[in-house]
Amino acid sequence: MTIGLVKNLVNGEFVDARSGTTLDVSDPATNGEIIGQVPAMGPEDLDEVFRAAVEGAKTWKATGHLERGRILLHTASLIREHAEELIATIVTEMGKTRAEATGEVGKSAEFFEYYGGLARLPFGEYLPDARPGTFASQIREPIGVVLLITPWNDPLLTPARKLAPALLAGNAVVLKPASETPIIALKLAEILHEAGLPAGVLGTVTGRGADIGQKLTSHQGLRAVSFTGSTEIGIQLQKELAGTGIRVQTEMGGKNAAVVLEDADLDAAIPTIIAGAFAQAGQRCTATSRLIVQRSVETEVRSKLVAAMAGLKVASGSTPGASLGPVVSKKAQQQIQAHISTAVGQGAEIIATTPLGEEQRQTGAFVEPTLLGISPDLDIWRDEVFGPVLAMTVVDTVEEAINAVNDSAYGLSSAVFTKDLGQAFAFINSVDTGQVSVNQPTTGWDIHHPFGGFKDSGSPFKEQGLEALGFYTRIKTAAIRTQ
Ligand code: NAP
Image 1 (tube, helix red, strand yellow):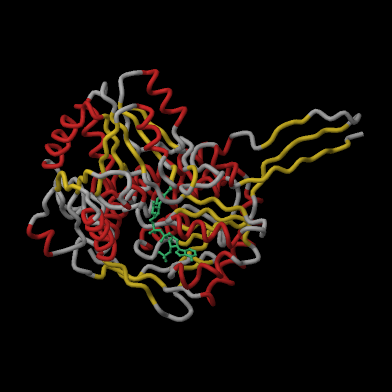
Image 2: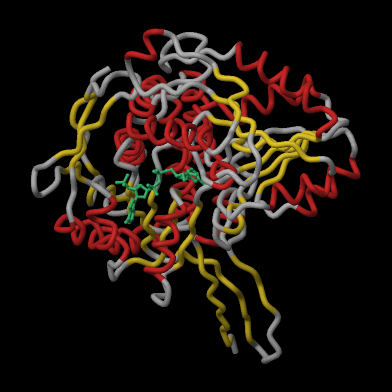
């Protein structure tokens, strides 16, 4: 699939970078085949983007919730209308399987449906006031211009998850997608434009974060930044923005653990764990990357995992029946392989791999799904791999299992497999993760479930559901003397 040049949306027009330079985008299932280009914007392009956004924020606030909701609902229906093109773009640009990309497109439409439908929510409250003849209220209003910085692993879903609540709340948005997968984000901008979003309400900026990040986050008109990506860049942003009054929401890395207790239904647990660890080639912030097993069931868990991994099919995303596609790039492939080699060098046991076919060994950024047996003193117990690698360790008691889950700088998601309701509640109560499941994977949260991690995985602000509106709005308290 060749897509060609896709331009940025600035002030209602589709534009190139002033320098005329572009970034190449390649298909990770090939040996670097270029599928398209986007403008390589530099710092010199950004004043115009923010000038338009500051004006766009005024227009959009005045537009009112019901019309904003209508445009979001129209966006959702256009996403569904263009689903085939969007699915093919995600498969080609990012490497997901068709089934995964189909899920991503459907869920992205749901974000716009959900927040479009919330346009009739109350956005304020009446407040009693002791002063005679005085009517007081609190009004939830937009904050102005918000910057959204998104990663490559859910290249349509993450922009949709942030854009839909930001726009419903009445903010103008500057969207900076990842340079590995910018095309699909620009296609979403085209759809929002077609749905009737006024000029300036959305500006897109493609270009290397390292070159334009500083200028993006220091712009005078900016009121909030919602970032999803690595912990390294997220914490850098928190530090850069400290003391500026600009709100920062950071959804960052994870080292998510699933626990298998001895009473678990293993026939149900094992396929759930396999999907949580290896779907999307392990490139989900919520992917299961640590497995903690109670010793009495270790042998059975091992043999069932080995059998399940033999049934995985690693192939390009467009191959029918593929369980997982390539990782996003050759660079990511090398980094993941280096994590595996380091772990083995430090004493990890390779329990199982799913071997690649000859074609996948020769072509594309494929990585063998790998199950390692480790002890918690290895680097791979702590370091995020962001690939199809599951590291398993063994404990004796439930308490040890909970301590092992919490033995991480990250705190995004965790899961426990058990039939004991008491153990399940104790687990929910004790783990230090923002998302927690019982007999479900660490992945797979719905659009209205508040989403976000604790510790080095997140920030005080949750995304999704009604919680997201808290980040994108501010409360104004008003009192009117009527007599
Ligand atoms: P990344 O390298 O941190 O990049 C994320 C975004 O930040 C990209 O758009 C990137 O642009 C931009 N960026 C890079 N340097 C910047 C700077 N100095 N200033 C401003 N922006 C900058 O992360 P990634 O490799 O794309 O994504 C993988 C990471 O995301 C993993 O750690 C994963 O766990 C995390 N993630 C977390 C969640 C969650 O909800 N918690 C969800 C998904 C992914 P360029 O692409 O141009 O460099």
